[in-house]
Length: 410
Image (cartoon, rainbow, N blue to C red):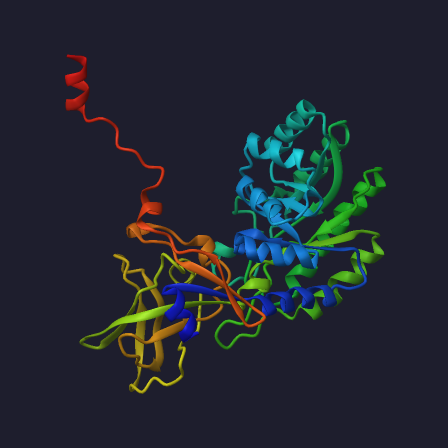
C-alpha cells in the first residue's frame, strides 16, 4: 500500500480485483438452483474497470439513471441484463432504456408507468415492466437514510395500488410485464426481513397468475450488509436457503441487486497524515482525505476501520478523531477511535471504502477528485486518473461584464 501511495499519490482508492470476483462467485454459489441474475448495483461504484470485470463474469446491472445505463453498456453489460429502478426517471432516460431493450423497468409510480407506456408506443418497442412494491417494512438498517421499504419513504408503489397498476399495464399492447421488485434498504445483516418481503411478493405474483398475468421473475433487491466494527456481514447462504426454494417452487426466476456486498471490502482509501493536532482533551489526526472522498461516516454514521499501512507506527495509543481538510465540522473519517497516534507523512488505510466512496466523491472546497487503482494479478492499473485544476473548471464560462456589454452597445 505504501508503494501505491508513493507511486500514485494520496488520497487514493485501491481496489482488489480478486476479492471483487470472490464476492460475486459467493453469490452465484449461494443462490444456485434458480434462474439467477446478479444485477450489480452500479451506484455503489461505477468505475468502468470494475463494471468490465463483473460483465466478464456474467453480471448484469441495477441502474438508477441514464448515466449509469451508459456506464453499464460501455463496460459491456448488455441491455437484457439491466434493470432500471429510481423514482425520477426522465422521458429521455426512458427512451434510452427502451432502445437498449433492458431486462426490466422497475416502475415506482402510476405517473411513471403512464410515461413509460407513452414512450414505448412512440418508439414502437414494448417496454419490459416490473413494478417496485413498497412493502411497508422498516428494515434493520444501521441508519434511517438507508431504509427504503417503509411507507414514509419515496420508493416503490403502495401495496394497495399494485394490482390495479398491473392490470392496467396488462391491458396495454406497449407493456410487456416481466417481474415484480422490492428493495428495503442497505446494510442489512439479518435475512429475516427478506422472508417477509418474499411472502408479500409471492402473494401478489399468485394473485396476478390467477388473473392470467404471469410473471417471469422476482427481484429481491440488495442491501446485504458487510462486516462493520464487531458485526459480521450478511450470511448470504442463509438468505439463499430462505429464498431459493420458494422462488423455484413458484416457477420464477430471481434477480438480486448487490452493490456494497461485492465491492466494499475490496476497496481501500489511502490517505496521508498531514498534522497531529492536540487541543485540550482532544487529539486530531488531520489527513489529506476527508468527506469529499468518503462521505459515509458523516452522512450515514458509517464505520470504517482506519489503520497504518506499514504497521510500524510507534506513537502512543490514544483516542483520536481522524479528520479531513474540508471546512466542515462534519468532515471526519473516524471519531473517538483508539489507535496508535501516527506521525505526519504516515499513510493510513481506510477499509471497506470500495462502495459509496468514489461514486459519492465531490469537488466541494474545489477539491480534486482522487485517482483510482485496480490491483489484479500483482499489477496495479490506473483506472481513473486524479483530476487536475483544468478539470475543476472545465465547462465553466465567464460571461461578458456589464461594462463590456454597455461599451459594445454604445
